[in-house]
Amino acid sequence: MIRFENVTKVYARGARPALDAIDLEVERGEFVFLVGASGSGKSTFLRLVLREERPTAGRVFVAGRDLSTLSTWKVPHLRRQIGAVFQDFRLLPNKTVFENVAFALQVIGKPKHHIMTTVPDTLELVGLGGKERRRPHELSGGEQQRVAIARAFVNRPSILLADEPTGNLDPTTSVGIMRLLDRINRTGTTVVMATHDDEIVDQMRKRVVELDHGQMVRDQSRGVYGSTR
Amino acid sequence: MRLQFILSEIGLGLRRNLSMTVSVILVTFVSLTFVGAAGLLQVQIGQMKDEWYDKVEVTIYLCPDGSEQPTCAGGLASDEQIETLRTELESDALEPYVEQVYFESQEQAFASFQERFADEAWAQGVTADQMQASFRIALDDPEQYQVVAEMFTGRQGVEMVRDPRAVVEPLILVMNRGSLVAAGLAAVMLLAAVLLITTTIRLSAMSRRRETGIMRLVGASNLFIQLPFMLEGAIAATIGAALSVAGLWFGVRYLVEDWLADSVSFIDYIGTEAVWTIAPVLLVIAIGLAAISSVVTLSRYTKV
Image (cartoon, rainbow over all chains, first blue to last red; front, side):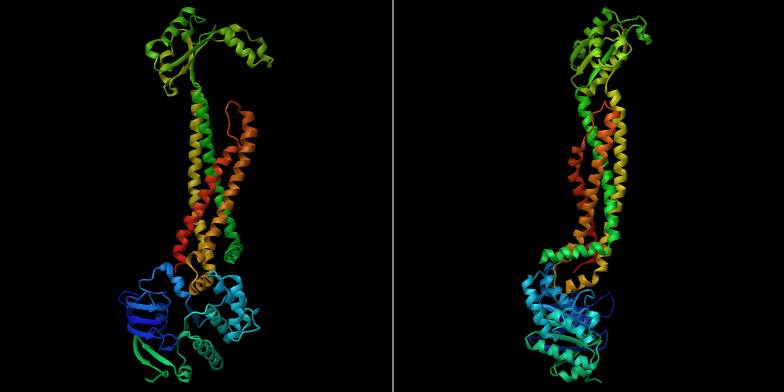
């Protein structure tokens, strides 16, 4: 589903590479934790998958496409197959929960009847049934993240990227979010989650890829957060 | 769905930056009014040239009784002098320039004078003796009027040689200068309009960074993201253009058709229909401005 071939990313000329010769393959339907300290290259990895950045060297394949040869105008189509969730939720404050989720479908030109059926289903799936008319500021952090997940998942992407989705949440709420991501993963969606949260990683027992200063130092199936600690 | 969504986005953007939208409308309004004024002046100049140059004829006025011109020292132009002039006008030397020569005697001049001012009380006291005989010379090429004018100016029995263009040309010169000034002001205002539209679109894009960020993330196409901004600029500029067309229409209607046409009547003025001929040009300029500004701004602020 995602394949990195000897990928290096250098942001500024002469600077230390953010990613250094990474080789990695993520299979369809896998759940992968991307762990490592701040600045280890986790976010760069996710940005390369979304093609918000292009690698300095090496090649990135996502959903069967070679991103180095993907023309700019096809990038939106790539992103329609990828859902993304962030630490800061990135919801629109002046739109309701329903509108926030529907927005993702509206802007890619989905017909109204499709939106009217898909959005409530997805909100039900993430456990927000009955809260369609609330606005983000009326919700708890965990609920806001569920809205963000609903928005990322409403178009049924084949890949879900999560950049520290539990970073702003307390442990109990985080567990709920992880259950949700796990459920989404069980529908066949590939999930790549960058995180600092060692408890969660240790609990979930999924594949763990550890980055350190842009280098891959560990790739362990059913791993834990910190074998090196 | 798509259209409705884009329209609501545009409405939102226009309202959010209402003061900027209004200033874009005003700046395009003023700048396009200058462009339009320059255009209308050119139309008027063209019309005057057509009118006057087509029927341009050099008139050689012959000496009447009591003229103070030195060439008229001999009093009323004699038949002999008239015959000499006529022979020269019809000579081979002038043949390439002259199309037709028409002689108007004092009596004929008096008749047409009577006819023209039949209703005027002051014209009743004028007699045929006070009229001037003249040669009217239609030219092959109106541009060559100087040849004939120079040849007959200062001749005995000729009081003066007049080309109607001597009257019109200074007027056209003034109008040409006027339209140049208008065009210069228009250029400055258009530049201001482009900068202002650019700033407006940038502000609009900034204030909606969150939305556009999410749009990009979920895979909205570039066109879909940028269209509302482009249309915002285009709509504001189009309203400005419409206002300037309205302004020019009222200007022509009340200033030219009602006022100028009454007070200075020897010119054939343009009418409001001229405004409609330049209206599409103004509209195209407005949309072009908005398009240029959008392309410049959006390529930088909302790229993938």
